[in-house]
Length: 156
Image 1: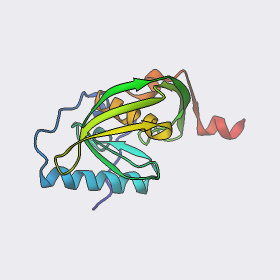
Image 2 (image 1 turned 90 degrees about the horizontal axis):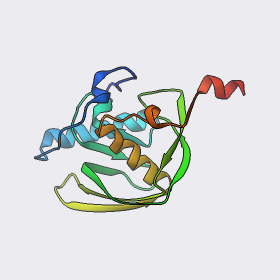
Image 3 (image 1 turned 90 degrees about the vertical axis):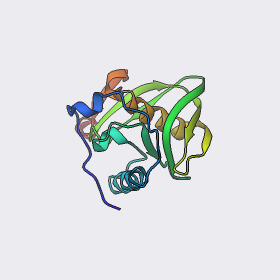
Image 4 (image 1 turned 180 degrees about the vertical axis):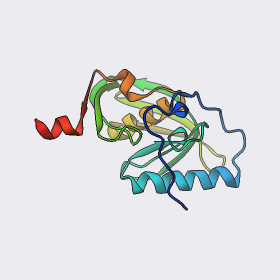
């Protein structure tokens, strides 16, 4: 495994709508493992393929309970609404108050080609929505109700 470069604000790949994965190859599995390594090295809880420069529909999420390797995710159900703070590996030091569904059900394919579902709430639900937004070229800074930087947080 290897740590990949995280694309930062302004890189055009972050605004691309990603292509679906049609075949889970060894190359896709290696990408997933490298994305996970990159996420852990940077102390993140989620990462999307475009954040490492690959515009395909793959995300990795681990909020501390289990690592999910997610291919071609689709949110099939949402419930409720909640506003909370988010950050992003592509926007270091920037945080925003973002409204998201409180609960989600996501259909996806795992790294072994099996169709799966995740029913999530709390941080996992927020993270899934944030990373799926990346696959659609949507950035949290575009939907945040307010933004602050870590510099502003330290001064207050």
